Image (cartoon, rainbow, N blue to C red; front, side, top):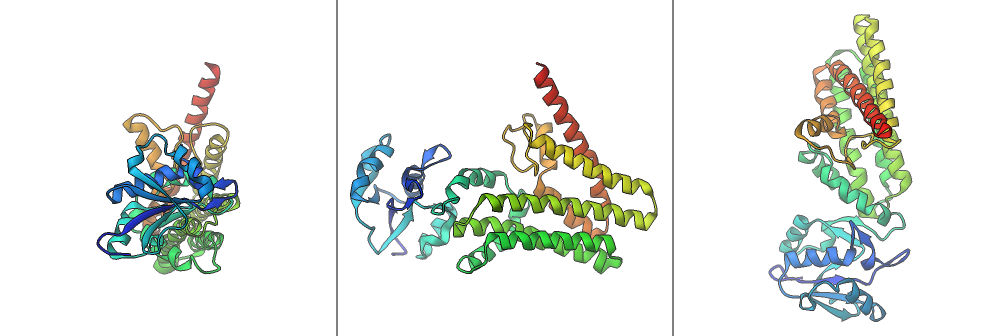
Length: 343
């Protein structure tokens, strides 16, 4: 493809488990509309759309609200010298612009493959999640996570392997906190383990999108290990603080944290407007104060707080703060829910 004026076309021929992928709806619109918008934002003139002959009418119907001068339907495969946008892919616009400018293949800009049987089902949720995911981690963890995923995409490593590795690092951090003494074992090892776990926890999603291997089990495993690591870490913090000071109140605080987190997750799964991770809120909070309260419980912010406090040897501050936080969120949610039932 030319570095100066690449011929940008859309390949609308790929099919999925239920038929033409160009017609599948993601975020309320057919995939073909997302691709046409993407192509129009990059190039000038009509967008060439290549489809099978028996699907021309359906493609035209999907684009009925758009002026016909903005696209051109063609038969057969796209030309070999074209920059191709496939209807079984989602692309990152800045990365796509960069790839076209450098004469690279458009596959380097792919962020999600929807050609797998489970990939399409999670596409909308994943795209929504990306809008509020990692308010801090995106500044440092996303780049190595993306690089790792791209390096592993053609290997036999699967996202669940990265998820298990991340969970193992969380348990290593918890064990180091519980049994370690001194700067290296008690502070440096937990901080490094937590930082690497965050990178792997980010990379598993990227790898699932690139390989088209997203699955319901993978999403469950990710959440399950996140919560397991969370509980293990705070149990370890409570034990280490008790062993150091002999104050029973610290063990009670650890038990209170477990109860608060359980009540919070239980409320999240039985109809409140919160998800257990605090990452995405279906019913978004209104008001600046409520937004800040919700943001304080964001999994990414909490993870970064763990890393910093682990390095400082003061993870006990996170235990106390989030015990109060989750108790408040759990009982506040219960009161709001009770009030909605009463009204």
